[in-house]
Every structure is written in C-alpha cells, then in structure tokens.
Length: 181
Image 1 (spheres, helix red, strand yellow):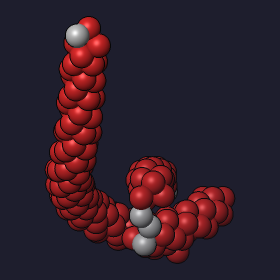
Image 2 (spheres, rainbow, N blue to C red):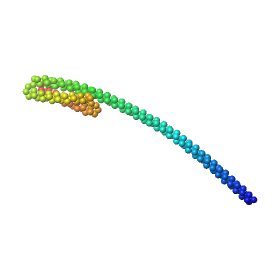
Image 3 (cartoon, rainbow, N blue to C red):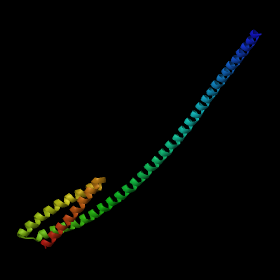
Image 4 (tube, rainbow, N blue to C red):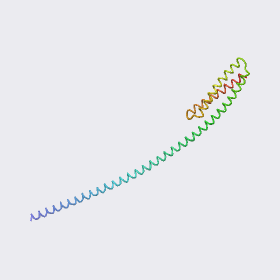
C-alpha cells in the first residue's frame, strides 16, 4: 500500500505541478496579451497627443503669422503717414524759401538801381557787394532745388542749411540797402 499511496501522491503532485505550470503559462500568456494591449493603447494615445500638439502648434504659428502681418501693416501705414507729413513740410518749406528768394531778388534789384546813381568808391563797393550777393543768391537757389528733391536725413540737413543761408542773405541785403542809400 505504501507504493500505491506513493504513486497516488506522486500523481497528485505531478498533476498539481502540471496545473500550476499551465496556470502559470496561461497567466504569462494573458500578461503578454495585456502588455501588448497596453503598448498598443499607449501608441494610440501618443499618436493622438502628437496630432493634437501639431494642430495646436499649427494654430499658434498661424496666429503668430497673422499678428506679424498686422504689425507690418500698421508700421507701413504709420510710415506712409510720416512720409506724407514730411512731404507736406518739404512743400511748405520750399514754398516759403522761394517767397523769401523773391524778396531777396527785389532787394538785389533795388541795389542794382542804386548802382546806376552811385559815384566813386561807393559805386565800386556796391558793385562788389552785388557780386557777392548774386553768388550767394545762386547758391541759395541751388540749395532750394536740392531741398525740393531730397529725402530722409539729407532733407533735414539741407533744410537747416537752406534756412540758414536765406537768413544770412536777407541780413546781407538789409545791410547793403542801409549802407548804400
């Protein structure tokens, strides 16, 4: 009997070991299936997140491009306004300088008339003064011409120079008129 009991115990142990091995195999198989399923789910989630990120980034890029285009348009509009203002200032200044040049021409004409009645050294001095005034007048006319076709920083420099030249020439004419009465 002992042998039979041993065989039975052996068979029982063998059956249990077989059952445990089968359960373990089944458990491993299910774990692999579960891991594979989780891996697939993770891949799908990653793809979804990636697609969402691409969409969101595309929207941000589109918004940034739109804002950039709006900023460029605003700057261009402001630049256009400033250019119109500068152009208006240039036209006004050139007009004013040409009027003042007309007054200078009248002063030179008056001095030219006085030259015809002047005598001696006064006539010589007046003739020399008129020559200088005509040279300054020609230079001023050239400055006004350059000013009317200039732009930007050159315009500022030329405008300052032309204003200064007109002032100087007007003062010289006034002095000559007062001196040679």
